[in-house]
Image: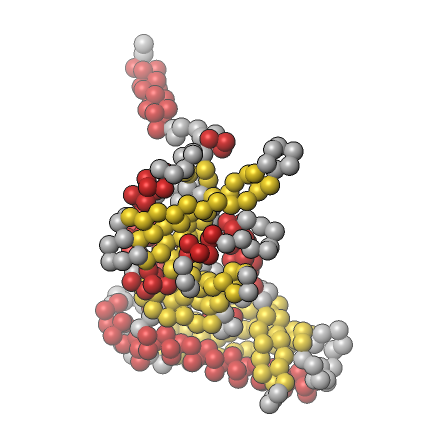
Length: 360
């Protein structure tokens, strides 16, 4: 056999050996959601939610089943779970991973590192922190017409299109393994028979250290990224409120003297319309100007107050350090971290109300 043909055959044989074995869906259990709970200093508990089909082919009903086990490592938990499963587990369809508050506050380094090394775990999955037990959250039935894995995934996705900042495993890894920013993820709770996002869970590297409310997530998102959609309620006078729908927003960062005496200006541009302002004559030009000034003042105040909170906590979910690094040569993160709590940060909001409901 000629040398070229021999080499080709050898390469094909090698590639064939590297090809993963095909898995028949009927022969495996696809994990949809994984929840981790703190047990003690040595053990964690993992709960998996698996979509299952009940009934015959003509009247099949989709539901979800949970399996739970405890061990010292997340990898060994899978082996323990396997002992009670009729079929092998497959993690290629995991869409959400949840950590309970106590575990997250103690640090999730071991779990994140294990997930990072698992090629079957996609980088677009969502991470979240849960108040209370993730096992209880995943084991309940919810009146939403969806199984738990689909319910959680769709709930997080649609909120990130509106008022919650963009966050998934890829974004978490960027902040976790890089410098100049800290990670965040949705904070979940169970209320009135539903799972809901109640805030933004803020991390210092791998530890959950603080959170902001869901109501404040819109202000955080205005500073974090440019986006469309979403709405926020503003106070208008003593007893009146209005809701501003975001048609488009854009944010700019200007960082001065990053290596010596840093100063940061954040400029937010918001173009929106007022959807709900009972008793306010929106067709009057002076009223629109007053609304723009009111929204501007509240946005700037709330945004600067939020940044000050981050600085006092020593966390940087907005990635100010990463932004400063990209704007300066020979950037020194050690010096930046020492200066970070006292860096002046000024927020300016440009608000344009283009519509005021049906009558303008």
